[in-house]
Amino acid sequence: MLVLGIETSCDETGVALYHTERGLVAHALHSQVAMHAEYGGVVPELASRDHIRRVLPLTRQILKEAGCTLGDIEAIAYTEGPGLAGALLVGASIATSLGFALKVPVIGVHHLEGHLLAPLLEPNPPEFPFVALLVSGGHSQLMRVSGIGEYETLGETLDDAAGEAFDKTAKLLGLGYPGGPELSLRAGQGVAGRFKLPRPMLNSGDLNFSFSGLKTAVLTLARQQTLDQQTIADIARAFQDAIVEVLAVKSQAALRQTGLSRLVVAGGVGANRQLRETLSANAQRRGFEVYYPKLEFCTDNGAMIAFAGAMRIKHATPKGWKFNVRPRWDLASI
Ligand code: KG4
Ligand code: ZN
Image: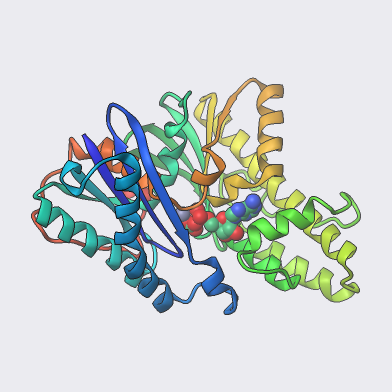
């Protein structure tokens, strides 16, 4: 079955074609980063309008690349939530209209389920069950994943998400938007150990996180320093060291608590090199396996939505041509 996936939950328009036997056939992405950069963050109304402009041309592009036509599409998956309401409505309405015209089933997908399943697109996918460290711009959670649709929250952030902490800290340091990639680049040039920042909730005894205090600690530190390029890099390094240590220690605790030996890392922060290196080193030392999606499928993309839709479509109940969006939606509830 050939499934078209449409992702429009935030500032990236992603489309993809996933075939249940042939795998990922084609995918394309348009990032709105340049458009939002001058505002220092995502402007929801601009995001929605841009998704409207991009979805259909990108869909035509991947159909052409795949040597297919609209008539070959057998199902359509779109991101139903969580995300920006207006942006989600664009994907939902286009998916449903196309589905109505083509008379094929349409399914709403949970954005985080897409992230969670993205590592399964890789050549040696993890087997169930596994622990997932889901770290994106809007969410930070540790989940026990027993199968498709079987997700149990083990711990989550009590305030800022990991990606949000990267973005806000980058802004404090005068770095560009989006902050994660830029801050991690600077951290690579920083001297480890020049500054030491707190490790929030490292010893809290549970699997929850809290990152807003870390951002405040950076603000206090930045105010005490002259922010030359090296100092910015050194603070970025201290911030990244702190956040990576907390994520790594809590992931290991989640593996211990569940008795599982497979860790899957997903979401935009999963693209962070230091996080990957630390988790891979820990995995070798402690004898667990760690799986990552390709870098391009860590951040938002259409492939993960097409894939999650393909996994679910067999069991989905047809819901006619109604569509829904859920700007707030708990993954453990699906
Ligand atoms: O998963 P994603 O694309 O969107 C959401 O669903 O939120 O994640 C975006 C987040 C942003 O906060 C971005 O700064 C962060 O992922 N990010 C990174 C890196 N690349 C993206 N954070 C740290 N290091 C990176 N290399
Ligand atoms: Zn995302």
